[in-house]
Image 1 (cartoon, rainbow, N blue to C red):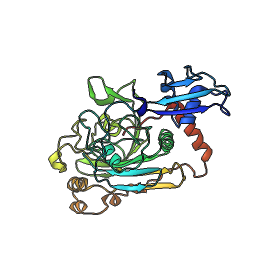
Image 2 (cartoon, rainbow, N blue to C red; image 1 turned 30 degrees about the vertical axis):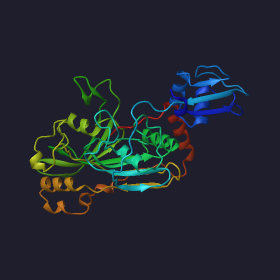
Image 3 (cartoon, one colour; image 1 turned 30 degrees about the horizontal axis):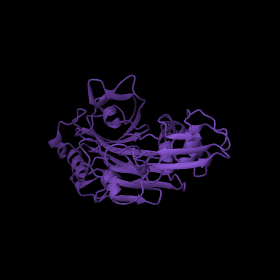
Image 4 (cartoon, rainbow, N blue to C red; image 1 turned 90 degrees about the horizontal axis):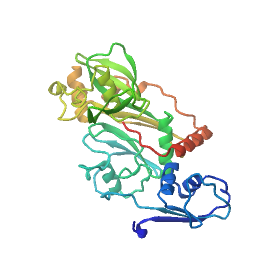
Length: 358
């Protein structure tokens, strides 16, 4: 490692004497506990010239030197890609992502991603999202459009991650599913993990991570239903996998059995009908309610017009309003519940920051 590329923190122990080493490093260097523990395990934290385990209890007068190496791997290249910014302040930004845009760089997609575009704006981004994922708190699939929140600081990243884990961030999606649900309301609670037969797909796996999605049918058309999907967890491909598991895949979803009838649905190649249309949360710093709504993009307006038999929806400005999509009520944590948020932050630090997948 080139020392000139690393960030070095040096400080003396005083009021934090008696605390675990990983907690001291996390607090003093604005890191998660997981990040601090990794630095300690890799020998990047020195106490009085020696290395110790994360469980070491600091003593008054200890001299700490913490070396934070640069993130490994390929550098992210900032790109001047236009983005639809629907909300922004010094703490966070919310993007209305178009279908077809990959969220973060990875092998095969090192350019043209949302992260490349965010870097190109020149605004600060939290490092807590991990390598090649600065600022990301949750993700959207490439062919899913809609609202996505990005943190500008690690503190905000931890708070938003904790809020999602505590189900205090409301994420509702508009989707069309083939066939018809038995009832207007459906709750699917089935664990999700990598498909053991095809690692590029997700599947219902008994040993997988717990996942819950609530579906509310808003309209029944001849060949499909219009659903409002409420995510309670954020597993990869969760809505798509849950709908496939009940025999009603997302319209246009080639991966999970909904690709047939694409011409009937008037969808472009690879596009499926899934849109992150509604995002609600308490601002992690100001505690004000942030309530953001994204209208259906043009391709999905044409699709719902074709499948509903209502051609006027193709040119209507807000077709979801016709079906009362935004009329659901959802409790949001009270603005005055500051101690509850502090406890959630502490739990997030204990776990370390993780990105919730959609």
